Length: 488
Image (cartoon, rainbow, N blue to C red; front, side, top):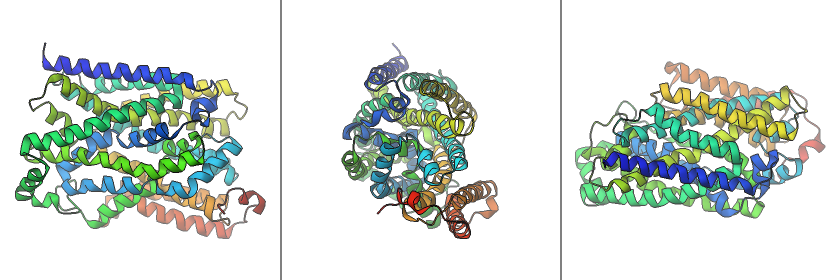
């Protein structure tokens, strides 16, 4: 039997096992919208840790991370830097969010902000910002799944078909099981990816160079610029410190406010569980280290791989490994893609119904109709992202950074919600609109770039200034209402 057939069989077997886990776990939640979206607020530490951690091990980490290490060298270390810091803000506002979620029945991010500022417009704007950010992020996951199938079958399965196979499985268990399916498949996928990451990350440098230290010594002798911080940019030239540090900053600002992350605050069994998860979360970055080793191992051994994001499947199918083992590693790359994509699909459908349609069109929508509509929109959102995944050739990491530029616009809003009583609905809405407009403008007009500063940073600055100025120029909200939200 040809090796590629064995590899494909192992990969498909993994997909079937993931589907089984996702479908069986759905029975753990009630049939209500709260059960489907928030898991009846019953998730314990283990599942919450993995549902957050496995989201880091996305196609971005398993494919984009090695791709950056392979093509841009030390620039890839920004991934570890922002991952360690990204969830720190939760420690300060997460417990308050969880308490308010239980008190008022929130299951989405925008429900909190819309209530705080008594504004349907904020709910609708946040829903649109979330979907605009979700689409490139979801496209990233689907593209990654397509790469894996294409490479392991030696081109026999095109990228579009590979993405369809992997995300057909994701759609089934998300449609059926909601957040419980996402949580338990992420736990399974997270454990699987941890083992594979360290196994492959240590094996490849040893096989190709004799160890991790000899690998870096060889790269330093041949391409020393790759190991000098802050690394290289897309053009192969030295990246500026402004570009490097602003990429970390925008990622830290946006990390804890991704709607599909933020909504998991509501799923925690209690505040203690939430705090334990926040404190333990940085340990997940340990498992990104071997992922970057994979990319570095290909610098000298496999020059000229295009696109760079395909370096992992290229390396493991080019060295002497048993076909079964290669299949496991390819399944790990799929797990990385699926463990993030399922959370995005689930959150996207929930947000469109709860924060947009129900707020602006049908406030009287009953619970059963809500759940059914969310399920339909999960499929629709997946179809739109799949369309972009099939025709897009943009770098996976670039797609991620583009998404962070929009999500980071929520950071001034979260500070105003919990820490500045004088903020007003007009200020919050104006800040969101101005910040998002700046991000779009800076991305469309390259002449505005300076020192490679991420456009999202300029958006956050404009957002914060606008929020403060407009809030001070408008009537304050009722003190009694605001006090329910402000921390302390």
